[in-house]
Image (cartoon, one colour):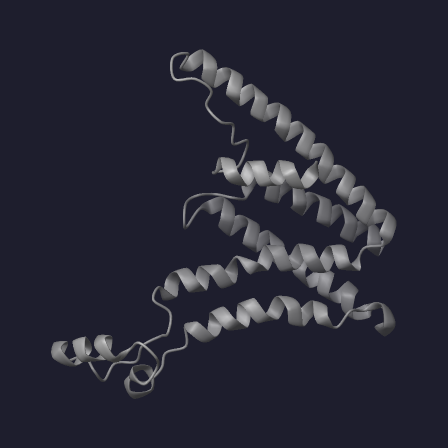
Length: 196
C-alpha cells in the first residue's frame, strides 16, 4: 500500500513537472508551486529510502545530490572583506570597494547570490523525484517510465499541432518550431529525445 502511494505521488509529480515546469521566468508561480509540491514527495522518498534494508540502500544517493546544493549554499555565505579580498581575482574589486569606502562590508563569493540561491532551490524537485524513483520497485519504475513515454508521445502530437497552427498564422515566414509545454524549444527537443 505504501509503495502504491509513493508510485501515485511520483506519477503525479512527474506529470505536473512536465506540464508546469520549465518556465522561462525567474520567479514564476508554477516553478514555486513545483518546488513546494516536491517537499512531501522528498520527505516520502527519503523515508522509504531510509526504511529500506541497508544492503538495498545506496549510500551514494544522498551524497550525490547533496554536493550541488551544499556547493551552491557555500557560495552565498558572506565572508569578511579581508578573506574575500584574498581570494583569486578579487584584487581589483577590493580596490574598487576601498575607493567607494565600502571595504569593511561582508561579501559572498557568488556574483549573483539570488540566482545561486534559486539554483540550489531548483535541485529540490529533481532530488525528490530521484529519491522517489530509487525507493520504487522494478515494476513500478517500468510503469513510471511507460507513463512518461506515453506523455512524450502526447507532447509530440501537441508539438505537431503547434507547428501546423503556426503555419496557418504565418504562412510566409515558414515553419515555426514547436516547443510544447516548455518555454524553450531545445528543452522540448531534449525531452522528446529522452523518451524516444
